[in-house]
Length: 117
Image: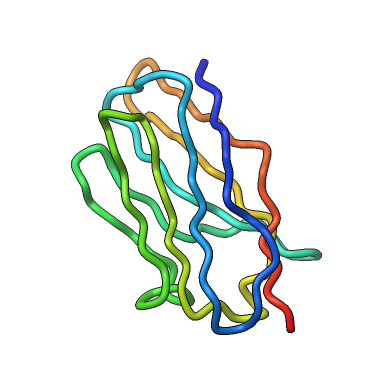
């Protein structure tokens, strides 16, 4: 198994910025890392992911505002969030998924991001 430790959430005003960080407890090859979020009363949704080869995917709602980056040497993934909106308020979860055998799926505990004036 692998543990994921998130940091960097908090309260920010609309238009502000935050950076979320996630560190994996060990290296997992051929794994996609990324961020999902869940707002109250809503389903968990994809925010952004990056494969081990560097292919990136964003939700339409965050394109041009959020940037995901990955450091394979440090087993970390970051999410730079700019121009935050109230609708970005949610619990953000780090995720690691390895689809090839042996398959692995791990989630962080979640970190709160609140965008409010």
